[in-house]
Length: 211
Image (cartoon, rainbow, N blue to C red; front, side, top):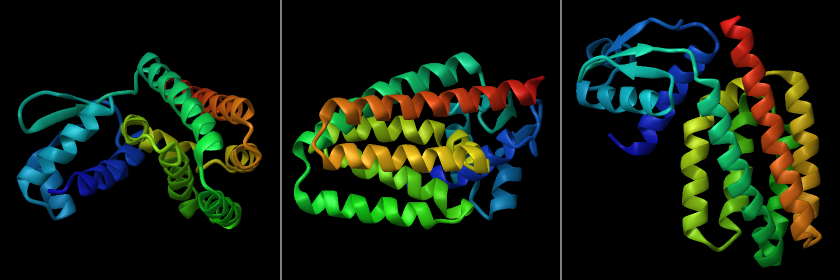
């Protein structure tokens, strides 16, 4: 099974866990997931491994995992790491991006502002990915991508809330403008603040579900 497919299917299950549709204590086995999603058991094991890697379940056996409440400390650490790495990426993008990339970034943020709630989360991830690629440093882009993948289910659930989505739109617009102005320091500061706001929202939702 391709890693991309496992990520997408793990997003679906992760969304259900974070929304409370699959509560903590639920046991998921490879055979059941394979039947539900139309996969081979080997592919289902890949999906379950990704769910565990995101801290949404713990392994009970080679083919069985148990859903768990997200650990706020792990979420905070991941968001802090992502915020610092993507702040560096935003600053480097402001310094290094050619004019063509800046025009493409402007087009993406314009489409993002018009997107519906379902499309917005993926387009937001695409915007962050594009900014990281604009650093011209593949290793930085890879590290940032891996952290975003670990947080993608939390990201999608958070952006399902209209109030946070509107603030996110405003933050993205300010970020893109700073990059276009070649203001490295401001771009890094906005990106760092943007990810800190995301972390606060996710931690609030986590405490709300567990309380």
